[in-house]
Length: 429
Image (cartoon, rainbow, N blue to C red; front, side):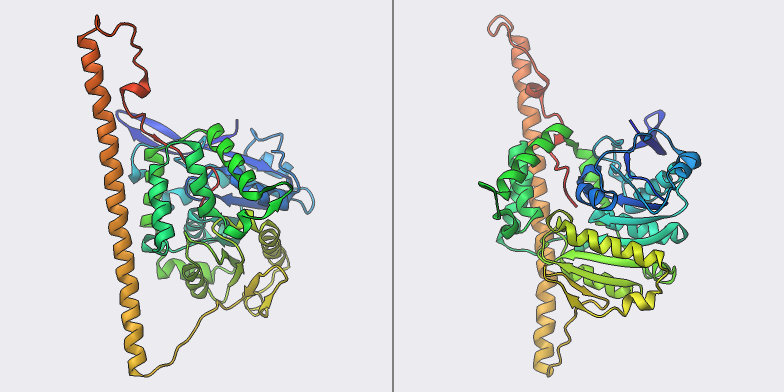
């Protein structure tokens, strides 16, 4: 299996290596690095791998690395894609503490993988948390970037909080309570896709039924993400922030940027993506599609077209000013492509300004309230885990002290306490 050691960390008295599992697809001089989001694995990029390379078959020489292997793949106008599992998920290393996870650290992982592959430059496309990592990578090593695509991105921190409503509170509560692949799949579907998409008929059943079966199968086959891996990646999202200097570095580096977002995304709100695109003018173009957080799965053709257009514009050496001066247009599928993010300017009198100030205050209070609710839910979950761990220990002590009264008892690991793992979907941001 293809692994790349990207870092080392101290584990007690020993030093262990941090290994990333990766896959390569296609061949060609054009290199594309795909960076997946929170709790997602490399195979979540399936629709984009198929769209960019024309095949879902991994490269036969995945074990090869370095300049020699890279040179062999530089044939013609083809595209070579590499996708990988971030630290903390899938087949990559799971580090024991959240301090080992940040978008800066994970950007260094991606850069080390590029070195391992012998790639001097690449188009870097990221989704959700992967888009945050891609931003850091672009600011850290702008000379290694051909172009940058940010799918369903936010600025991290409080911007990671979804819009507060009854549906979101219900999803958050069900997410924390999910203990089986079936329970988790139901939550993930409502989180990742629009209702219209899930209710579409595909043959004799709905798309919801098909995706539900695929999610359950995927979660069961890839295993469970550990608590420390999940909490570490959440910590990376929460602590992520792009400084003005970093954004200036990206804006002045000369490569083109596409910010692609689903209008119905309830996880990463559209307004934050628009704000980021606005801060990256004139090199950024905003592409809004009808879809939710996994717009890359819900609208794969439109997303792939936007990515290919970015690659072609880079190859033709289009100037950032030309990229950003493309006229707005709306396709038949509902895609809105705009160099200037859609914004609304409201001119009002003093009374209107006061109303806007109150509205902004309420928005901040909403975020604070959501944060408190999140803390309460996590605290509740933590207490449940403690109780679950304590009860089996008490029962096991009783059983050990009275062997003659309960003969033949088999003390399984699950009976003795919580195994410390949490179910996680392989297809998220």
